[in-house]
Length: 142
Image (tube, rainbow, N blue to C red; front, side, top):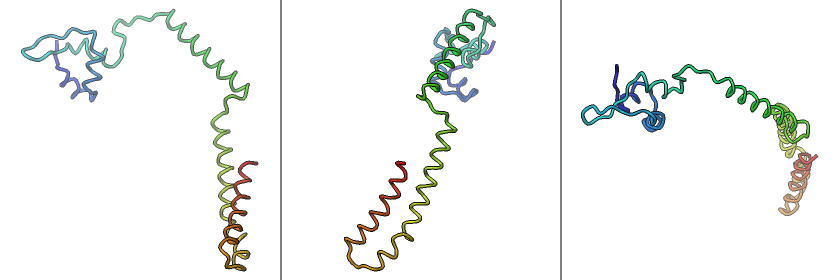
């Protein structure tokens, strides 16, 4: 029989004392002087979420399976309705969109340099840049 305090159990397991206290709330501690200690044989299975009885509840497992099957069917239905998009498709579309945008942004100097070089009017320079940037942004909408 090994009795350990919450602080000692925390030290041994690396778990926080709050976690330990909440998981051991069903155990009755043993008073050892001023300290409350727990039988490690009873505490550790609770701490690590192990089934101490070794019982297998077939009905509970069937209910759990049915629950997960229902969730999977609901997801398939949402995908079919186009309410959910596979992550790979989203990633591919965003990658393509960012690549197109990057190319457009990098083309701004070449597209606008000759127009800007021909003027010293700040309003006209701003207008040229705004037009080229708007074209790049418009491509994102398409």
